[in-house]
Image (cartoon, rainbow, N blue to C red; front, side, top):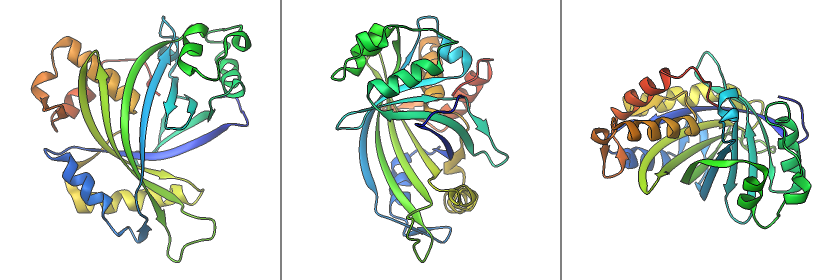
Length: 268
């Protein structure tokens, strides 16, 4: 990805909650006083709505990009995600271009995508009050819609450093919406928020694995890719038996991975 003042490298590992009672696992993780010797702070709760966009020809997906508008209130954030790089331990690294909804961040995104899908008249159609209308006018269309209840716990070395936490433990309850059908997915993210944080991810992962065993499964797929597979499986009639009251059963994740393995297209 081209460099930009609003870009940064995201380093995280994702563990899908693969259990018949995922809420219980999430509640247990939410109340852990510490993880791998790191103090876990009180959960900060966020309600988010994410809408992903692509061109009608799905050029972004073909090239491994993810384009998202997040409503986290108040205001919106626009994010462009590069394709992921997976480390030996299963951590995901990707470059993100992100900023609060503005003409500046939109222009940076459009400039980044110029060779892939040239777009013009951004200044003329930009609407500060309506991100959705602006994206439509530019030529994008919605490809995924989801809401997330996110609980973020800061992970801090003892004694706490003045610079603040080095990593975050993120507990996500995700609801995918597909033409009136809703599917609920739970996952845990361990994300670095400092250079030291990347080194802390493996011990935190190991500690959670020792506590919760197979109920936490390493997951190398983004929420965008997971949702794409779910939508395809629903349309193909291969998912219903793996859904209970909207919750994904543990066996559903084998089916999701099998569906994603059929695709040669990279997922951001």
